[in-house]
Length: 410
Ligand code: AMP
Ligand code: MG
Image (cartoon, rainbow, N blue to C red; front, side, top):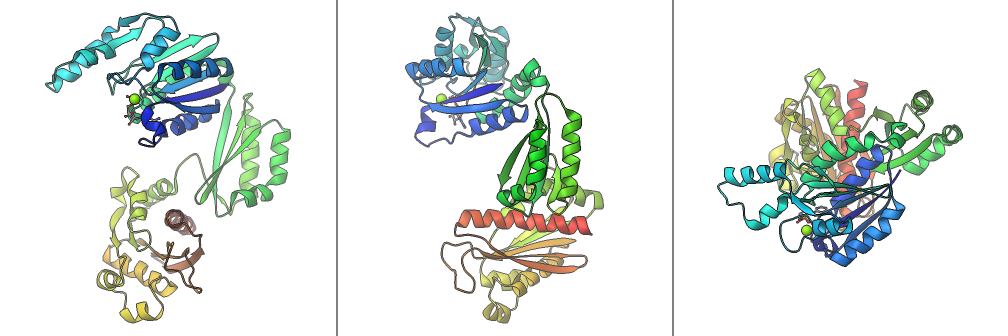
């Protein structure tokens, strides 16, 4: 099954809004075995929308559209779809009742433009939107499904999860899909591919398909069968795990911080961070996980030498002699952070994120990460690249990876 995604909105084309909808939808569709073959972003323009539908519908089994469903004059999608599919706009009473109640509870009038939000083409299936005034719409034309969803990301996501994906999963072409994903770390995509090439040749010969999904610090491998061959997939995954025990760290889609959270919660242990080059981003990764308060105490962000001395008791002689980006400094940061934050584990980061500040001894991208735990402290030096943002992100993912390894070995 093949899908195209069309995102509609002038704001997407001038860079005012980043098109996150298509990324999210692309990911969600690929998870259920639908291959996305094209993403198009177009203006709020009647002719553009019709022309795009003419191009996409013959090529795709599913076309998902977002945007242009607002109540104002610039939003044209519903009008265009109604004309395109030859329908008539009628009032949907459930939507009307929801919208009236919504404005009434906020003591606001239901303006005429908002009342129009309850009008829907009579030849579509209405996808009820609990989070906004514009319902989603599901059309079918010459064997292609066309779904129109609001542009607001949280409204789109809820409608995809509650209405669109369950309906698509029921489709007989998709029922045969079976896939498993494993996560690896500590090895780059191309090195991993080289390392497992015999295994990969085997699974491809067996009719299974393999996808490499790299992100900073992690390469996921997704193995799929489109003809329901569970046994083949399961066997191949077990073989793979024994082939790369040093790189394999999890099945499913859990992030480092989710897995760390689960382990700490089970062991009733706590963590904190003492951050220089990541300055709070590491803490942010940890608190993204709901329930983090059970194991995360807090952080000390100490960017300057003065604050490293004041908040983390790093001796000024150490800073003068070895510098902040050094084994000695991060180890002290981690150990002192552990005491001050009263935690079982403290992660410390210190590095030269760039683009300036590098020396021949410590070029841009030099990062030290230390973890202090119940059995002492350990530090590791990393050499990343020239890009500041990427260096900060890699510092975080590697810090979490080191902590996870440590937790697994203790
Ligand atoms: P609309 O349904 O066109 O009224 O969109 C409402 C709001 O959703 C817009 O103002 C944008 O902020 C947001 N939005 C629309 N399309 C997208 C998209 N493709 N990705 C992320 N946000 C979007
Ligand atoms: Mg719009």
